[in-house]
Image (cartoon, rainbow, N blue to C red; front, side, top):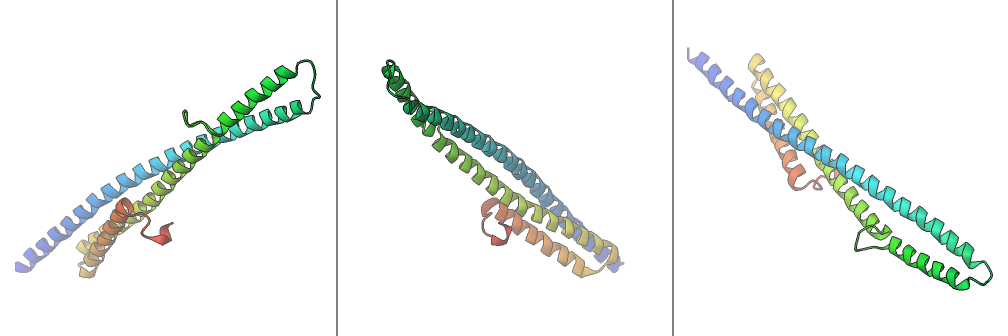
Length: 184
């Protein structure tokens, strides 16, 4: 009779371990999905900023080419109008190169795009940590569950160890995603 109580107590501890692993699995999956969504959003943002940067570059090239072509025309009766137009184009080109007030100059667009890429890369790094943590929690749950069926005690210890490893990965993903160089 005492053996039956010991088995029952052991199963309760294993069930508690499985519940804890499942709880951490839920955290890991939720954080992973959020990181994945943020990575996708930041990637789209970076692509849009680089597209705008390229559009500014193309428009600038067209305007610069027109200015160079206009500079080749010999002076004529409307030379003042030509010089005024060239001066206007020079101001426009300078504004397209850097426009701090609106953040829409090429320089500012490149900075924004790089910042978006950095956010994307950080989110992907976190996502990889969370995915590995989820796998550790899932395998830990399976091993602990197998112990209930087989009675092989080492399985519950292996499940607990994987749970700890998953918790470490979860914490590193959240607090120090750059700590593990092999995930870069």
